[in-house]
Length: 367
Image (tube, rainbow, N blue to C red; front, top):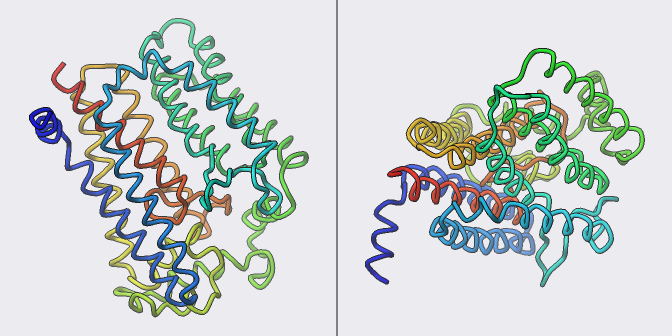
């Protein structure tokens, strides 16, 4: 048993694990810093995130030990279990600001939509690894589109526009890699615009509509609907090169910056650690992505290859959306910064995904 464990860790890719644990550490540090300005009660979020981080790391090592080939045959079971859970949360989920996206369990909140992303990566990897992109591309587009449409529709029904948008963008990225013509891309864009319009007028809550309208109309007063983004930009700009120091950010500590531990934690890091802190965060993400892409060129297994590509696409999209939100370049849609933002479900899902990727690297690189 000990020999197998040592052999497993010997093949473990620490160059993937290293940037991941650094990002988790940066997130915990920023969450603790924000908690200092909110009093001892707010340390509860730090303690909760620490528990999720410990559990996530345990799950990372657990999933890295599971042969990823097992998911090839389990994909349909995982998919339909995920769909059932998304339906259940609509009826039994805890309402938060008009949305039903979370289950409450022993004082902890879990968001199923975060875990469905991993399931979709596995399902799409399973499909693309057994299909030929040169034969009947429209069929592949329709089948994978339906695969993604069902959970996306359920997530929009909660309504959680941000997660649905990330899933759609992630799917579009994978099918683009798989191979799409310009005509097919145009059809996808037109269909997407239609569903966006329906969602905007039928499903989204007023505050979600306001977020999108604030982005489309930057002239909206920074003291009204554009307040959050304005404060985030001020926080990032005031950090300068080296920042104001942990616990000394005026925007975050004096509560001018809303959702400072979740949506706008990037702004907190920019204010308290400055440009150097932001550079460090971006360097960790870059190191992680480059290492994952390194394995894409060396793994001789299509299923594993698409799992890694899916992980890169998903984490990259979430990173870009969150940073774009903080800098006023994208609408605020409630997407967390992977590994960094406060949110147990997001952290657990991201660490599990890294565990699945490690499994691919360990079990497929020598095949």
